[in-house]
Image (tube, rainbow, N blue to C red; front, side):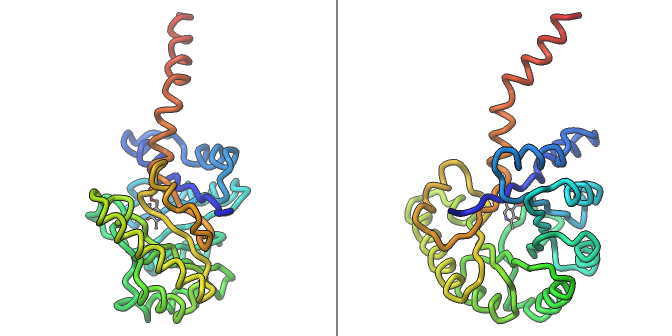
Length: 239
Ligand code: PXP
């Protein structure tokens, strides 16, 4: 059975929209674990647009499953990882102007620096996953530079608007997942997966874990709305 790692970045996005102290991604992480999450993912971005350093520190302390730190392969972030010692680091590309991670790390371009970072992180016993596009060459390079794991980018499949495009993208995901598994890499998959697209992965047993954020946080806003309004209604009724 595949695992589910829940990304709580978007809870922090809501907090930062008001520069408030709530909703707290730490509380969301605890509740996600109570709901059955096998791991908690936070992406500490260079611009700190959602998750803050304090969130990572506290989530590290309170998480009972595992903490997956998603981060760019920069000197600053590697230093933070060495200090926090997450259960897994997922290396992702990062651009300031993007709304969310737009694609996988290009190992053809970055293999030497990524290999160095993997070495450094391994030195502290931190396993490393690399977020890559569903591309066989990227899978081979991840294996070559000693990654423990790859996370295959599912966004192209999930965001496709016509069936042919979607099938083509999914076939690429299947091929990448199968090659990674054959090379004895652990295989995660993530980006854009929602309550509909998750169903496509039935039978793809090589996937060890799904990394899902936006759709879960979005749904929790709606499933929690009735209760939240009722609680405020009760307070107003008592005035
Ligand atoms: N995996 C990676 C590497 C990501 O960057 C993200 C988005 O932060 C996710 C998974 C989760 O994607 P989504 O929020 O679309 O579920």
